[in-house]
Length: 371
Ligand SMILES: *Cc1c(COP(=O)(O)O)cnc(C)c1O
Image 1 (cartoon, rainbow, N blue to C red):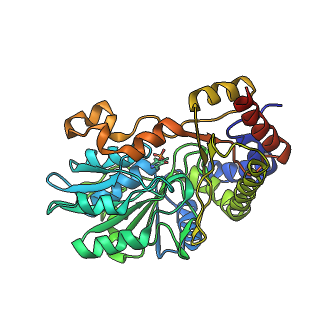
Image 2: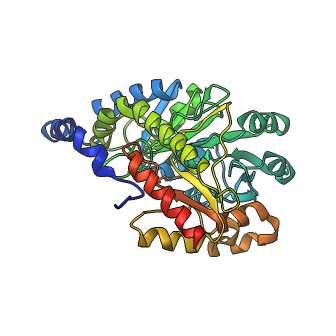
């Protein structure tokens, strides 16, 4: 048996015809830039995320960039974020000329430690940028309380978390701006790169709309300096076919997570494997099912040899990246992120995964530690 980390064919095959029809529709229209597909997708996805405004952009990275630009973040500003995320989170902050202020994670959730974030705030802090890592919301009530205390703005990196909630509130609509990615491995994946900015603020929505198209309004008049952050009509058309299935796919991932918990409960791996922490008040959408494992690298090699795909998200926290050496951090400042980087391993969790495949994954892990 082989178990890939992600099997996009399993999602594609049953939707092949409507997806190809959507591509044909755009090809036949020859309208590739903006237009009705993008407009319709924005309306439809705004309902799903439960926000007033959804603005399609070219990627999750560009969503973060446009959001930071819309808030006027630049040189002299500090943006507080977690050191343990995909690179784009910190990269976008640095690209607008601001300083990424890195803080450690809460070891249970892998999300930003808001107490550490409070200690990191200075007079130059402008934005808090929590990440909803692996599909589980950060502690947004604490983030909002901190933002309120220091008069900070909040951008949510919800790239991995479409549909996740914190105390019933959908991520992406809790802070001033939310950023999503439709990279193919995210829960809602395009046929390439695509992203989204969400907000409930009319003025910010207008600004993001301008920024994604060179700050242009009307044509050839530029009040702002933006970029080309537009969402392709082809990607919008693909996403419109997939969007109605998102709830089912999320349920599939959550069912698989519950099944892993039941399967691991029947093993005696409590000392070797720690399962992801799930809270009742946060709806986890399991973009990744990330365990902590002793002798993680040995386990990963054993699973690779057994035909089971896994991945390490993320082996090198931001504070150890060469491009951020000038920030002057040391690993000792981030013990929880360091420990996570050494222990984490993402197991296959995609919706179409079968119970037999999951059994094989858990049995293979158990066999490794019996050796
Ligand atoms: C995927 C991801 C991004 C970037 O999204 P792209 O669409 O790949 O540019 C940003 N932040 C996080 C946490 C991500 O997982």
